[in-house]
Image (cartoon, rainbow, N blue to C red; front, side):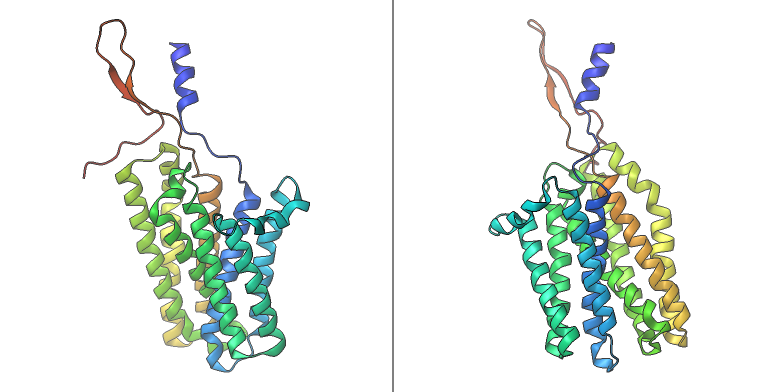
Amino acid sequence: MKRSGRALDRMSPRRQTSWDARAATNFICGGAGGGLLAATALASPLGVDLRSLIVLGLALVGLGLLAVWLEIGRPLRALNVYRNVATSWMTREALVATLLFAAGAAAVVLDRPAAVWLAGLSGVGLVYVQGRILRNQKGIPAWRHGLCAALVVATGITEGAGLLVMAALIWPALTPFGVLLAILAAARLVVWRRYRESLRGVGVPVGTLKAFDAIDGPFVWAGHAVPIGLGIAGALLGWPIAVTLAGAAAVVAGAWFKFVLICRAALTQGFALPQAPARGSGRPGVGAKPGWSRAKAQ
């Protein structure tokens, strides 16, 4: 019995250890920074000088990339990331980031609308590429799911809008963007619900479901209900403090979700036996997939 238990334990999914909090920092800061650049581009027609927000967006993306650079075993080989553009989403992330920094620098120095919009589009591109990086990790069921990339993108864009409206205390003209934040938070909530339901439907490691169940309540209420309610109320009543609090809630919730997604819910595939081997002339036994939840019947 002890030997059988040890065998099942070896077969069970395990939490991945290749990516730690430094990798999570890249997704947290990079996604929020890219989303902020996109949101700043949308707010640029107001005529307010928002170049400091562009600088903040660039700094967040840079901080995320720095965290990844510190994580890799041989930092001096970081330039090798540019060698696999045809096959690697990490290479594409590096290329998009290069364009993003160039466009962002031009937007800050030249203050031209075209540069601001190019930086914003590059920010959206960076968030999308980060989602595809996770989607391409086939050995992690929580990441390879089709809705994971959509949820990462929705989270990054929502965080960007949250950072934008947090600046309403400095630029009250940004207060109406609380409505945009509310819309994006509602969209993220829909994707989150569909993602979790789909995970239960197809079956994933039990540890993945437990990690998401642990944050579901606070994530839904503090990360969505609060931003939606305060965002709309603040925008309609002209209360910058309300939309600032809404933005802070959306940003903190998004960062916490990404940390859980990378560091706690990312369990490996594990091993499975389609059927137990037959002994002698007997029939094969029932297969085993230890550590997995059962897929719901469709």
